Image (cartoon, rainbow, N blue to C red; front, side, top):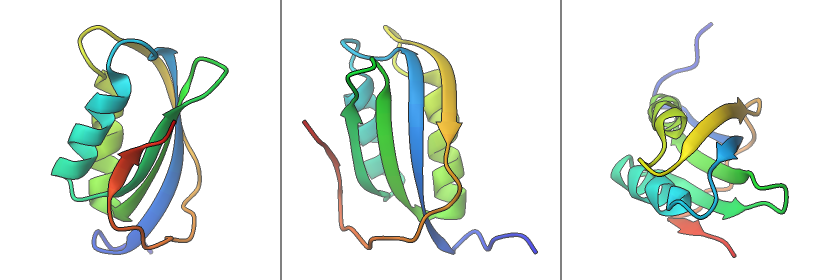
Length: 97
């Protein structure tokens, strides 16, 4: 069966490309908060950005759509989404350093 759009899920997402030093994390936070998602994003030493997003399945899909676009100064080459993980029931979306 299909997942209910209201079912809470968590996905770890890795975004590759020119995604550091271009405002990508702020872009992610703005869209995640607009979608009422919880979780975090952070830069990885590899030059990628890791996003851990939790919320209704349809809102996670919408965030993933925006992650492919990215901010105007960035260039996304790949978005890799994990299988759904167990929700942690976090309350906000932040940048981790």
